[in-house]
Length: 130
Image 1: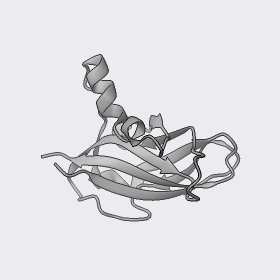
Image 2: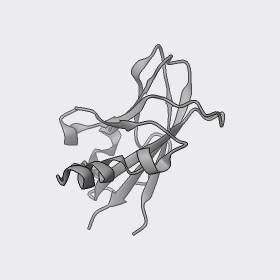
Image 3: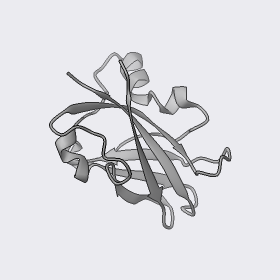
Image 4: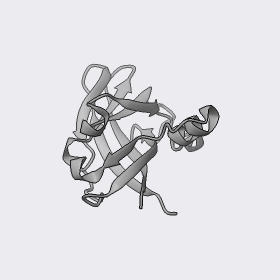
């Protein structure tokens, strides 16, 4: 099955979880009324450096506005790009968050950065469900 990769550009302020950006602000490719499983995130600072943020999160009405977060490591996509899949396998519990794309305007991506002085390219790795 092919994954859906949703790119978002998040600009930060002073640090912590900031840069609240709707997931459909850059590319609006999620199909309305479809459910998507969030498998993980990829995140980099856009300069090609090894520096990365601490974590990436997504919150929406589907999560009660609570953040679901992953480590933010673009250089290790096997870690951050499939974070929720690994958690599900490790704990043998259903830990992959599912979102309805009808709520895509309120699906907010945020980045936690140690200094908050960057703009990050975030890619959400999602799988459309049947």
